[in-house]
Length: 329
Image 1 (cartoon, rainbow, N blue to C red):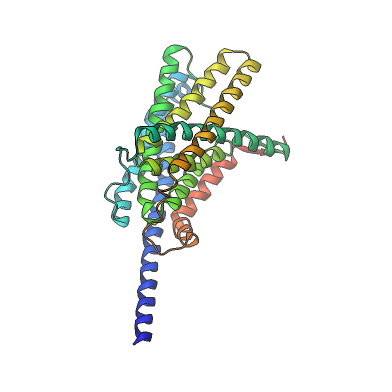
Image 2 (image 1 turned 90 degrees about the vertical axis):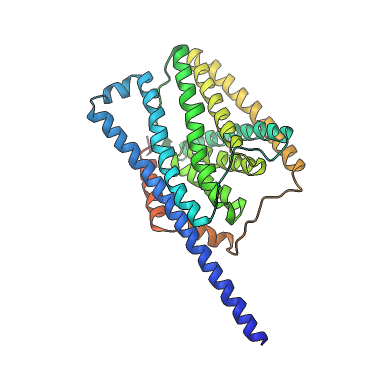
């Protein structure tokens, strides 16, 4: 009788594990398709701009490019992940991946915003160190250049593009749809998987290290506060600081601008580290959810990342990334 029970529970455990692996593999495949669609849609829209005879205007007119990029962000980033979200919810059984209502007090919410923004500044410092390291071993890294429109109206347009639209679209996609649907497999896995996709999406090695670290920070504080507003505000604040520093450098001499930027980033980064230590201590009695799963971390990563659409998406993004890396120059 005991042998029968042991066999029954072993069989049930095996079936549950295989079912979870199958679902997670499907969710990973959907995310891979989302990444592929992200690249495809942006290239189709770029071809559309060329077909309309507006490519020269797009590449030379910073106002036109910034305005067009607002549309490209919505269509190329938010649209594909919003579409796969419908399928992911059916697979995971998630009714609403993440909401805009907060589950912590105002003090912890504000502390999370300050800490998360500060950690993004630390991520910028790590990214700068990575660039120096790569340069030291002979690799020159570049990234897509987005011209800054001049004047007050130019700053306002850039603000809408990078602070409002980019933050909202990317956080709805990565932390809302993807991380939100993955939380049934544990918060740590959901935060990590969405951070990896966030990094690879950027398609260059200057932004990827920053995006990976920032993705972990944003995901952690979003999960702990229980609201997507945390992700949107931290992302928007980081982009606003970067935008403001870019204009400061543009409007001042190179040495003064670089020094001022470094001081601001280091100050905010220090505040982020202190704030994070305080936040973790205040919330140590409410650890991240381990999820309702029997899969090990390695099994979850294997199912999510090792499927054909995801592998193709990674290869494509790595190919794009290689275009921004040169050696021996």
